[in-house]
Image 1 (tube, rainbow, N blue to C red):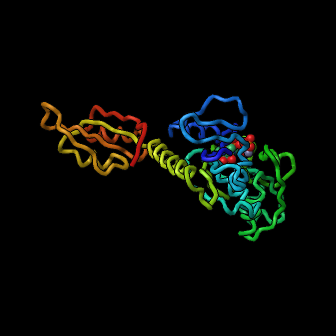
Image 2 (cartoon, rainbow, N blue to C red; image 1 turned 60 degrees about the horizontal axis):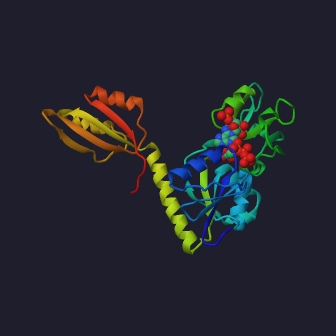
Image 3 (cartoon, protein in one colour; image 1 turned 90 degrees about the vertical axis):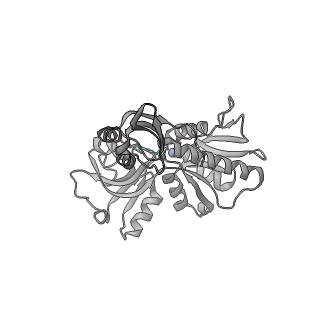
Length: 295
Ligand code: PRT
Ligand code: ZN
């Protein structure tokens, strides 16, 4: 840790690494070329990245080895349920990627269909603390078998009756003959820090980084729409534009009956949105990405 430089822990390799580095790049943080496996410096911001396993990120931030970290809520809450040393951690910002759900699942054609069916059974998971806390809340006593990976094979191998694992598309459960019956946690990548705030230059850097992250997140689904609309159907067009409060309406030279509409749409613009716009008479519809945003 260098004085006056913010240290950010990012997963070295995996689902969070890609999203984390992309977020930093979009936030204008350029990384210097470096051979160091553990530390990457930024060449234009007082920021150093520490590249580690995602499971280590909560303790690196809690101990002060890093100021901030990008980690899944699943890993953060598991760490907090395991150790009181993590109580000082808080989420500074939800980052909107690496979304997944921690679910209880059992063999599709078996007889475990609800949480109460787990009484006296065995559950395999990489999230023993979260699973235990969830079962305790519901008054169910079950044995938990901790596994580092390949949790989905546990029922087939006779290691457990059910599993508690992360699901995104559901394909892994499906191909292993399992069906989810309960959601334990909804998770996404978050920016985590200690509750006791840092001060001075590091705090200023953090504030700037968080504002930029917010801008990147907001601009991800925000689009700029340009279209021509019949003047007398303007209200209908406006009602369809997702998340716009005040579009700009300009005249079209030589066309009294048509106006040009420019709007920033803060909600997702789908093909079906364009079809609806066309159906009320909009023409020459252009949807453009927004590169940067600041409120
Ligand atoms: O080496 P390191 O410990 O850093 O990496 P890792 O193997 O623990 O992490 P990685 O990269 O697999 O996941 C990092 C984080 O990504 C997780 O902690 C979650 O916050 C998030 N994430 C999002 C996921 C998934 N989606 C996901 N689908 N993590 C894992 N999975 C696995 C899941 O465990 C299961 O095996 O994908 C499979 C299920 O996927 P579907 O699409 O078949 O449902
Ligand atoms: Zn991990």
